Length: 634
Image (cartoon, rainbow, N blue to C red; front, side, top):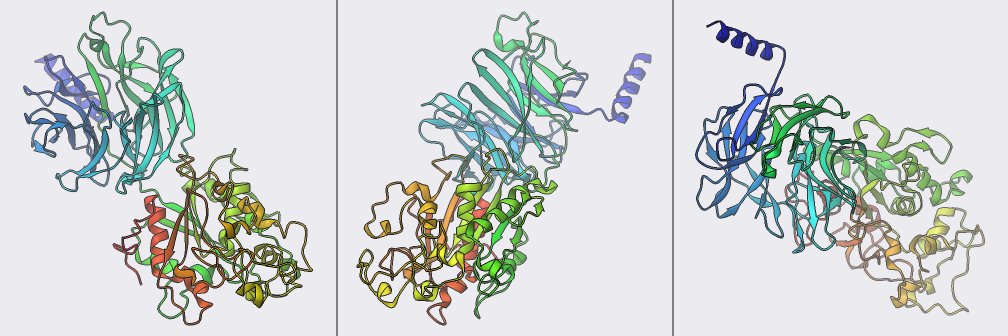
């Protein structure tokens, strides 16, 4: 009786002191079963306790239920849910084959691998009630996504391990959890295999197994979520040795639980040497939870998920002669809307708009008239990465603000001339204040003069005082004749002249930006078209997603459209030549007058919806779908 009282008092002490539990898998009963214990290894209890094989446990967001894989259905290994005491069993998936590694997100999605233990293994998601089954990753025939995965950003995104059979490398990637398609590479380490990613309960850190091939050793790496900067690598202290088989953060995210072979276990079967350990995030204070000749592995802490949805900072860059309010906050012609209004009508889009204010051209201010597009790009650099802007004024930078410090990237949206200053930043300045990092996830260009402007409306003044116009005109004027002659037919005696006000660089600005003279647009012979979209994905796996939108049928008389038109030099072509750039024509832009198509383009609902969905999903909506489907559009 006295011993029982002491045990009860000890258990009460553990509860009152905040001691919490861990779930793990053990085969000590002759088959794999799910156990729970206190996080010091005491009170180990079989909670699945049946004649089947149960493994791969994970906790619900509220830490009151467990999802796991089991062979209870003879057809295959499927997912089940039970309470922490093993009661209230619920089957989630059915079917043949094996489904393993379930991970439960705050938004009730469960991600798992199927078909397991095979080439081309994929990650699927399903809701806890068994509905909404969908494929989340699409590896090639030579890839497998079965090295582990976890959710971050409150279930919006997945981080996962992918094995490439061609290169024999295993790296970490991320993708949107409910927008199957584009992936972003997180690691690229040929001599290190990164597997078993686990995100902390607060969503700030990621731990993974780092298996070093030369020389052979196991370690745990910790990264910042979003920026994916490595915090530290923990080498396994004795008796933990090698073959890490599970990683989880403790409930308070101050320690890691992991399973690995213990060097002091004499069992001849290598798997039987697996034991459960815990360690501080700084690699000190190793503690051992199990010590036997059974296989104890796959530990998961019983703790509530505290991840918050990741908000995407989006920098909007206005055009030449209208400020941020005119471009983004107010509608254009009757019947149009604005980005600001659509965002207000859709609070579920976790987008934080940041409207950059640049000097507005079109007046007589000589300082603004002398301003180059490169100076606008410096302001974009300061707005994203911090440091001095074009006037020498220090800026904090979006990525240095506490609320975005873990994101690592922004989305960038530019309209008209703002798209060109954005492209200048992407090509010449991106990462110069962040150790060369790629700082932009998505770049969306709206009605961009990518190859210049060539009409008399823009280029008709031979003594043009505004330098940015001269740069966009390629340093040359335009005439009624040049607008009527076909592309490539600018005879010398009637070819539009250079601006009399040109400064060095005005004539070559577009050539430097695109990597070729704009006259190459006439014959289609572009030597290096990829220069128009530097560091773009998929050529750069973790690069920038380039989306280029313009009015269909060349209706935009300022910048052109899908084919070069109305300029014998080859200007007025909005389409990008780069193979990675996604060009999309947008129809139905209001046209009260021919020249108003350009001004109304950023206020046109399909253009707005396409940009916002691309930013949120990290992939461009399919061309055949309604981009505004599912959105409230004022």
